[in-house]
Amino acid sequence: MEVKQVSENVYEIVCGTVHYKELNTKIKDLVKAGAEKIILKEVYGQRYIGTGIKESVKIDIYGTAGNDLGIFLYGPEIEVFGNAQDGVGNTMMAGKIIVRGHAGDVCGYGMRGGKVYIEGDVGYRVGIHMKGYKHLIPTFIIGGKAGNFFGEYMAGGRLILLGLNRKPGEDIVGDYCATGMHGGVMYIRGEVPQRYLGKEVRVFEVDEEDMKILREELKGFSEAFSIPVEEILSEPFTKIVPVSARPYGRMYAHRWGIASGLIK
Image (cartoon, rainbow, N blue to C red; front, top):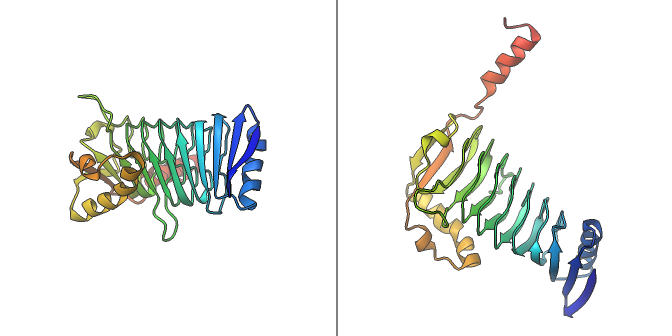
């Protein structure tokens, strides 16, 4: 690992094969010393970058960011010039993450606040248990497609799926979309076949209030990737919301009753 000061309060780290613990310790030391920007080069899957950082700092990552990028993030801005692995924005509270590529599975898990913008596709179970916290409304926007279990057990926040890279006839999302969803809202560009959706949600057309929300939320994505908001809004959106606050409550209670002998 090579560290050098580029200018006042700006540092560059050539990561190479350095262990993620050593790298993250160095990042936090620089932040405590007053760093306003940290540039990471030759990143080869190092995990937990940005974990728990509360100070206002910009972290640029060149390479492939490892699992749990920005976990417990409290305010910094992280930008990845490449792909990211699983768990982007895991339990994130505040700040912004921009990925100029694809991201893996379980991104936005338990996310409580902040903004995440993915330029390309994401894997499975993105937005699982996404919930928000008090006045915070987390927003996760994906420019490409999503895999199975998109928004599984979602309890709050906003998931926006754009499918800008879709081929004609290609589905934007996989099976079991919104399974167990009991809060929050999804906005998906285009139609979502009913066979992909959980039974506890309903599909609606967007109204004026929804369009206001979309325009406001898409501003950050538009600025990050230089895609005009009006171009994104040129195709109609589908709104997905839950119609049950506790979709599996009766099933769990029934199984518990059988297991305990109260129901035969």
